[in-house]
Each structure stands twice: as structure tokens, then as C-alpha cells.
Image (tube, rainbow, N blue to C red; front, side, top):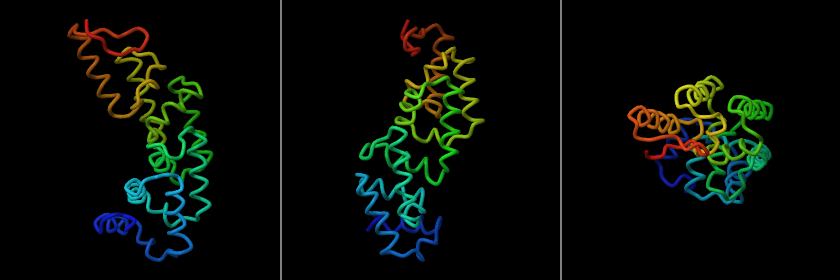
Length: 190
């Protein structure tokens, strides 16, 4: 019932057969109940647990600590991005999260508030490698002529969609069909 279908359950079992040996009453059910307390819907709990089966088999206190970290990064319980932030944070150590946040601030020249905005809109940024983030930053600066501070305004900051949108903007600029708005650094028709 937790996963909604036997197909999803089989995917979880394929990724983590250990779930069958976990104590249902002391571990699995309390973790599922805690995720519901965080106001994560049944469908999103299933998605989270398919992606991160250990969310159900880990110590309840560890899952609570991940939820506290997600809230500390500015994603409140009950928001539609909360389960995605839990997915991004899954089993990252506190020092790794801190290092990634610092790297985002240095690479994109973001303030704490801007990092918070970017993480609230695209939590999986935490899962991207430093090399990939560096390449995205360089692309934004050199190829699309955007300032580093632009990317936090986009909900897809250094993810694939930003790359696609920046490439589209560059093509339009090359054809003389648009210009960049100086305040928002977004494409505007000529």
C-alpha cells in the first residue's frame, strides 16, 4: 500500500532487498509515519522511497536529522519541494552539505539568501558534482553573457533546462531576434 503498486515495490526491492529484513514495526512504519508528519503526500513518499529506499530502513532519528537539515536550508515541511530536498540530502554528511553550499556561493557568487532561493527551487543542485557546477557557471558567464548573479533567479539554476534556455537565448541573440534585459538578464524580443 505504501508504494501504490507492485511494480514500484519491485523497483525498491531491486535497489534495496534489505528492506525485507527491516523491522516493519520499529523501523519501516515509524519512518513512513514521520514522512507523513512532514506533510509529504503518499505519492511523493512512494517516489522518495523508490529513489532512496534507505529512507524506510534507516534509523528514525537519522531521517529526522535529514528533515531538520532540509528545513535548515530553507525548504519547509509541507512544501512541494520538501521530499525532493530529502532526496537530494539523502545520506549526505553535514560537512559535505556545508561544503557544497559554500561551493555554490563561491562559484556563482551567491549570497546565503540566493543559495536558499536556488535550493528551494532546485534542490537536486546539491547532487550535482563540483565539476559540472563549474562548467555551468563558466557557460553562463562566457557563452550567454550573463552575470553570475543571474542564475539564482531561474528555478532551474545550473540544471539542464537553464543550459537549454541559455543556448536558445544565444541563438536568438545571434540572429538579432532578442536582447538581454539588463536587469533580469532574460531574453526580450527586439
